[in-house]
Length: 204
Image (cartoon, one colour):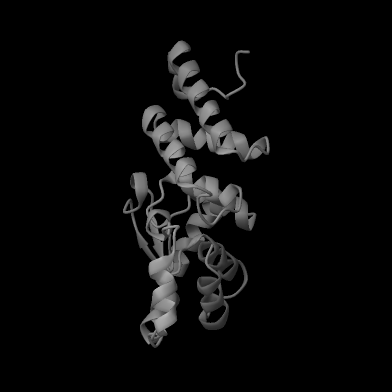
């Protein structure tokens, strides 16, 4: 979530009503550069609209110049949404000259920043961050476990596991990874389940 992006939308957007609500939802998903890649379903749930209405509103925002859409340019083929008002604000922002002690503190920091990783999240990881209101991984080990499991079971199953965990209020990454492995195993056992991924608790 980017407070900066939401602030720029509030202050500079020209749209109103549901279009403004959708733009704010995108800003809520966006990083500080105003770039986001949420799914249509997530946006529809966030603003209490149908998928059809969300798609129509996105086209309207793009026509008004309030939004740039890059089709299939995001992780795993997701659409990338860029907020021009945020990019413009960054262009006009004067660079801050760090004080000498700021530089020293940065060099002495024992915990490396996860910002770069967060900006290249997979769909499943982005969904985990959104569902459980996380801004970064708690530890490197947690991040590695999530990414390793997703590589093993596939993006679709990992995404399904995250959504299952959200429905059951299970936020622990090890539990989500265990659920994903169970889903993958059940999918193999049930011959793919006709293209539908079985829930973690199915077939007990």
